[in-house]
Length: 442
Ligand code: SF4
Ligand code: SF4
Ligand code: SF4
Image 1 (cartoon, rainbow, N blue to C red):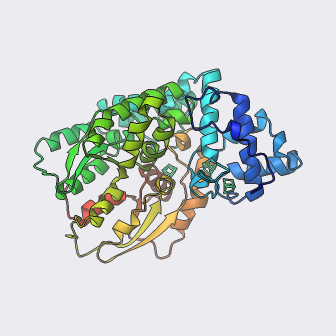
Image 2: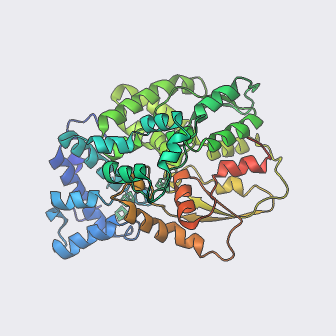
Image 3: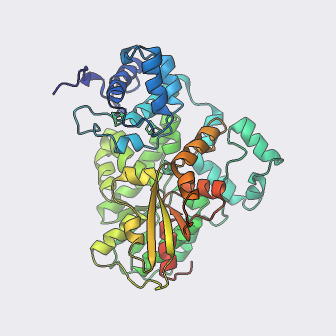
């Protein structure tokens, strides 16, 4: 079949970080021009994000429709507009195994890696994305750190973060907890009497849940305990996505290798990996198998095959007839469920199928990205674009609901914070609703 273009197979090495051409800028730009030609011929993603309208404007207005004229300057401008929500990846009909092999967000991850290798990553950027380090320091010093990070126009720390580190003064930073999720789990699991009828899981807490949204981990442990699941929390680091997104490749690789080595024996011994944040879960599912060094590709694939978001793990229990139906009969009335883009990117099903099991509860799904995407939307440079994406894709849809829902939940705690911040309403995660439905106190 002809697509009226050069299929350019020799440049399609963006998935292999070990490939000598991976860091070759010319080869990458050639591959970008090939993929952008396909996008120009298709245009389905025009309204997904700010990147596509700008790409098509450049092609139509500046380049007489000729994508082969796209140059490094255009690419640098386009790079600043992709925040890796992956909407255009999981909705594109031409992703592998289609012979066109398109994957626009992966092109920009590679672009960041090439740029990071060429120019290095600034200390300022490293401070923005080192969630392990910042999280552990802020948790150890909570509640003082929370007081210092409080959102207030006159807070000198927030002004310093805004102007010197580049975290916008209006961004909500969820409160750090002195007792991290890992510490809580260690204490709680000492008295566990689980026999494993519900299976065995290794918890990937994620930095956000470990240091800030510990309530999500507590709800998870309570629900899993109810289902007689054996739980372990192996040593782990940040999944590495924030580092990958800014081209700090060495740090991403170090985190990835550490995590694969830490989880591989557990998976070999029958444990599933349960994740508590969709972005991080997606990194284990999609990025590690593609970016792991050759000797770890097999364990990375094995881990991916056994990785589940907590709500998908519960769905697995349901399919095995092991899900408890001892729900609170009262139900929740109406729930608006925000489907995060990285949940969709996982292609493993939506949390609404579990919420729909709850008595006297009606669930209405809202899709779209809230433009937070790790630390991208918190940064000073991206704040306006990020809020505008959230408004167009999610916030206005919720604000216009009449009547307003009784509850709002989002798979993504970061998206939840954005909705809370802008609409001034409480947002929970689906697993917290499940814990409530079971009447569990945690
Ligand atoms: S990413 Fe795929 S669906 Fe989107 S515009 Fe490009 S070719 Fe079309
Ligand atoms: S990943 Fe998201 S932000 Fe990036 S190009 Fe695709 S739709 Fe746009
Ligand atoms: S912030 Fe949440 S909603 Fe946005 S891309 Fe990430 S997971 Fe998806």
